[in-house]
Amino acid sequence: MSNTLSYPELSALLAARAGVTVDAGELARPGAEFETFGVDSLGLLGVVGELENRHGLKVTSGAESAKTPAEFLELVNSSLAKAGA
Image (cartoon, rainbow, N blue to C red; front, side, top):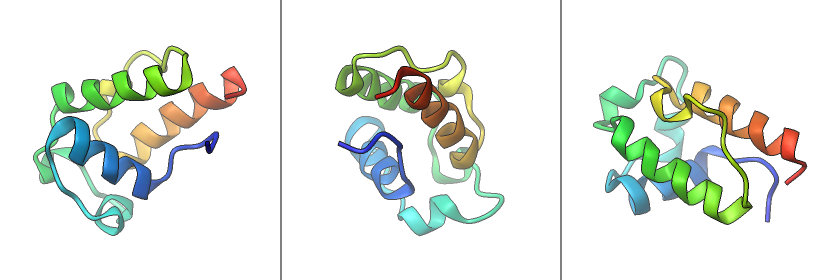
């Protein structure tokens, strides 16, 4: 299991936990915002919950409020790095 979350993994998690299908390339596009894809904080909360279950750690508070995929990945990957997951 990877110790960092990538755009393709985020795309799969959004489909599974938020019910929103978004291409990983679109998520990685500079300036991309979750709102554009119809992803809200509740959807991100589902993704955060899945990540916490998978890795057995608490993801940085506020990740579910991230406005952009880049910000979300930064917060999550920071949590994973600190935990040494």
